[in-house]
Amino acid sequence: MIVQERDGGLLLFRQTDHALLSGAFATAWGSGTVPKLEHRESTLVAAARHDDGWAGWELAPKADEQGRPVDFIHMPVAEHVELYRRGIDLVEAEDAYAGLLVSMHGERLYTRPFEPGMDPRIERLEGDDLRLAKAYVMHERKRQKRIAGGEPDGEAEEGWRLLQVWDRLSLLVCMQPLREGTSRALPPVGTPEGDVKIEAHATDRGELILDPYPFGDDPCRFSVAATSLDAKTWDDVAAFRRAFRAGVQAVLEFTCRSRH
Image 1 (tube, rainbow, N blue to C red):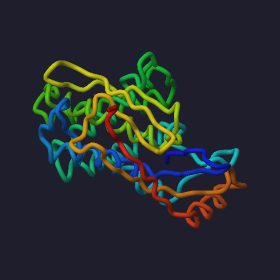
Image 2: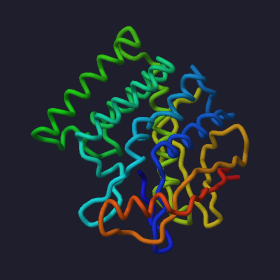
Image 3: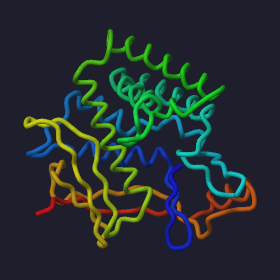
């Protein structure tokens, strides 16, 4: 669950819908600056399905003690590692190479900084949470070696980096309204001239200006499903779930375009 505050209420995005938006970015990927995808079909599966493990959880989402929806940032480690492992299993069953990329993504949520300058999540854990995270990381690294026949190679590493770009760009759209001042520097990706970081800047017209521009069409239209609620907290989990299921089903549409 991704939570965006808007107009006195909330827009709630299922992780699976956020992933489908990542998959749409991947499908449109490739421009004069950013090369087209290697292992294209497998990479598209990884992008669109990297949060499949959330599907069951989001049938019965939770609220915290203050009655606020529990989002992906505040998910307890014990639940998080189980749903991610399950999701990676599902992706690998369809496409082994996609499973490799999603395993790298899921494992590195714990072992790599989520943002530059942050400590890896695993370094902030202790007790049972640390034990569970270490077991999860070891399991996924074994999976990666099994699929790759050793350590992931350079193409897999680049596939993982691209998945981070699509994931972060989708999170930018889902976590906050697109308006002047909304911006993000995306993780680096490889080009024939070396690594580049795409800068994303929103406008009050619901656009994202990307520089350098990574998509084949300019401009390029995208959309993502959401649930609109007119409150921010509820008395208990049952009340939140009733509101979520009865909420207005919305589609957030936006345009990506180049700076020029």
